[in-house]
Image (cartoon, rainbow, N blue to C red; front, side):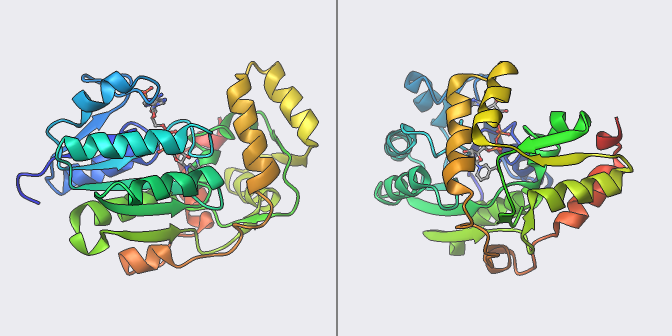
Amino acid sequence: MQNSEIVLIGGSGKTGGRIAARLEQLGLSARKTSRSTTPAFDWEDRSTWRGALTGATSAYVAFQPDLAVSWAAEAIDALSKIAKECGLQHIVLLSGRGEEGAQRSEEALRAAGIDYTILRASWFCQNFSEGAFLEPLLGGRLQLPADDVREPFIDAGDIADAAVAALTDIRHRNKIYELTGPRALTFREAVAEIAAASGRSIEYEQVSMTDFKDGLAAAGMPESVIALLEELFGEVLDGRNSQVMGGVRDILGRPASDFSQYVRETAATGLWSA
Ligand SMILES: NC(=O)c1ccc[n+]([C@@H]2O[C@H](COP(=O)([O-])OP(=O)(O)OC[C@H]3O[C@@H](n4cnc5c(N)ncnc54)[C@H](OP(=O)(O)O)[C@@H]3O)[C@@H](O)[C@H]2O)c1
């Protein structure tokens, strides 16, 4: 890994931030990039891409807002080609499970003629502490259009460990890893664990898609984000991704960490008790 520079697209995010910290601990050179860095990288402004990639030998790519959006595959195709022109040798793509847009994006990367590692991740545990579910949890009630479908939530720390392995060990090139937690829970069970660990009463309520969308619109959520959530909850969350997969063990040689561990550690910070 000498004379290499890793660029982290989305480097301040839930996964990118953890990857940056791990690479720094290893003494490896990593550069975070997003809209707020110099040089900036904006998925919605292609004129920024070349400047952000120049000088790097490999990249970690966390697309925004989600590979499920219609323009994602075309963006990943264009990014992979520019990366190749800039001399990058390897791209690690954070992907999603069971999403048509994610699959098309993976195909675009694989066809680009650059080494790849695809990390297909289940829903992150951190959605409950660093994402959209935090505010409702703090308010005492999470309302989602999800019934008893089970999701094997994965810890973003495991994704970061997998990404670091992929970025630093050539044996992980041109491979796809399906990363999930070791246990599939319903959203109701997940909220119950969080409530118990934080010593608070937090309810989970299943709502209709219409009520869900109306609630988001009333809270000022942009139309594009509402459409994305409708696709994720209405189509992707139908049980197709409930199966626990062995990708964490395959790439890291250890089991994935359990949702309970995430809940214990996060509750201990006092985040959910506020
Ligand atoms: N959450 C899940 O459960 C889940 C599951 C599977 C896959 N994924 C995938 O994970 C990816 C997100 O990764 P993450 O959760 O690590 O990131 P994140 O925490 O959502 O955000 C990362 C950073 O992206 C930057 N960003 C936002 N809009 C941008 C834009 N237009 N151009 C460039 N940067 C932008 C922001 O920094 P600035 O404000 O500085 O730009 C933000 O700090 C998505 O592709 C999603 O599909 C998520």
